[in-house]
Length: 212
Ligand code: PMT
Image (cartoon, rainbow, N blue to C red):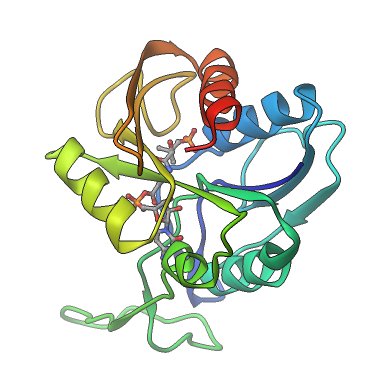
């Protein structure tokens, strides 16, 4: 099985020295990639900038920086994949203009205009063929279930892994996490707090032994 996984944050440049990003360390996505290699899958890892060792045994490692880079890397490869897990924390907005030179401070406030990036997973939901399985994550600080179910619907996903962020020990940066997996079929599976490696193994077993 050919499985593509995205991991880590994106960086949206403001000028040559500054960018907009988020707290994703890549640990959850890399744990999924390692568990998938161990399970014998052909694994393609598309990674934003992280400080992690590249997992052994990948079919391909594709480093990217921005949401636009990630969109291109993922959409180019998706047609030949059996499944895609979108674990990356992709920026929803980027600066309208990237200054070619360092922006120097002036008196008073500065306004940064932002525009929407492409919703990569939503694009893939529209491209998806019947044999392909699409899995997203929902990272939320409130209304976890409702927001996750709405994202599964809007992005045409087969599964969504809902996790809480902004709380120590789960979500961004932590070595542990807890998720609830919702399937399009209505199945709901709770994975209590555990290390991201164990969680990744359990999630893959649930998703690919039953095909949601
Ligand atoms: O990397 P770690 O430090 O280990 O942290 C793990 C994690 C918290 C980043 C991970 O478990 C997680 O929740 N990843 C998804 C983060 C996210 O961007 O969630 P979201 O609810 O904003 O987005 C919903 C889904 O759409 C996600 O699958 C996301 O990859 C995708 N998306 C979002 C925006 C966008 N422009 N394009 C997308 O494809």
